[in-house]
Image 1 (cartoon, rainbow, N blue to C red):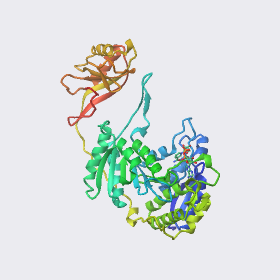
Image 2 (spheres, rainbow, N blue to C red):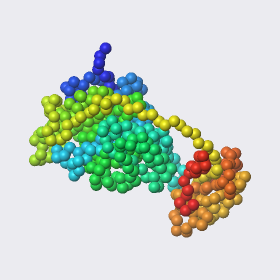
Image 3 (cartoon, rainbow, N blue to C red):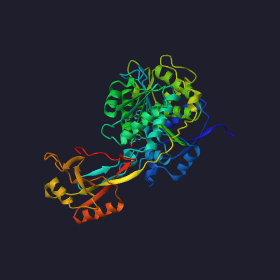
Image 4 (spheres, rainbow, N blue to C red):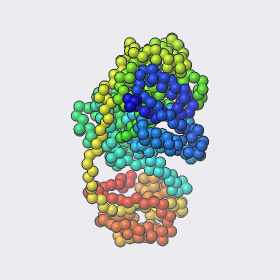
Length: 484
Ligand code: NAD
């Protein structure tokens, strides 16, 4: 039986085939024990009418090999095409997106030569659930979903990653000063899990100042764990400030399957010219080699690659007059790396991937606990655009609804209280959130809610959605309105 590890490979679009060929040449020359199962993805597949960008038999390849080395693809504009990356992440549960951002100064220009951070981004939930609705003439909604197991899994992954790779600090970034429930959950889980890793320093930063600090002082960060959208944004900021947009690799890791790629896209503007930098994909492949248990090959390639940069052999995107010695094509650059296999960088720190780093991470979630869930009210969202949108008019009309004591408490418009006693200056859209509770906050039934909705319909209102107000072991499971 072959000792080679079979992996799924996709050449992708644009510069994809050029950089994949260069990368595989380097992997083979370094003695990586790999067999390639090549699949087709991207534009050609989309144009065959397959909206996911990947044929079912390609999913089977991935199911078998569990490791995917992928070139960038071009996503056709419009026309209901789905992002292949999002599909792959979700179908195979690739919950962790790992993006190292490192400075290679002075060989790659950066103002922050000491930067060496890793962003661990939650990959499956948050605003990327893609649940969107247009509810009124004026208002559109995207649902942000954050789950307890989803948060715990990525946070544990970040701490295990830090432990495995000898990192000292994990920073959590959220916006829990505003999103107290969803982001608050992520922050709370972070604090809980952190207690199990006393050897690792921890901190929390609000995402806005956190992003500003990445742009201004990226050297202060080590491992950063955050929710999906924030992670998407800060990864690009970090890559940009370290000068590594064209150099960065990324891993999407799940319990079974993992996908490795460059962070950049298919660069159609330079496709076919043979000048693209293969380093991003190569760095993705280096992460893959560590993942599949070939860390010594990963080390050999990484050292040779750094030595190539030090020797001034640079592709056009990183070429600097005075510092670079040769402007290399994609294949020349790959050849230069191959010639340096076995050599070490002389100025930059050598790559070193601990054998232990290849052990699979064993992420175990805390046992589930169930709390007592009780229904104590309902928010009814109404589309209303009459009487100059006077909150007192809708408020007085809705006061007539009373289902077994379930009555109107307040109305907000885009989260701000407008009834009773709103401020006349508040701008109102056609989207009204009307909160109904009993005076004594007693537990109600779904039948009572149905009766209330019937009455609201009878009063001539278009209710567009409801959100139930629950308590969990008596604790409020909903946010208070601004001004409530
Ligand atoms: P891009 O990353 O492809 O290109 C941005 C700029 O960087 C271009 O000027 C390009 O020439 C340059 N560049 C990128 N990679 C380079 C490399 N390896 N060497 C030298 N220069 C390089 O971003 P874009 O132009 O916004 O997107 C192009 C296409 O890529 C779009 O269809 C987009 O959907 C897709 N895309 C795919 C992925 C992926 O498959 N993971 C990721 C991002 C974008």
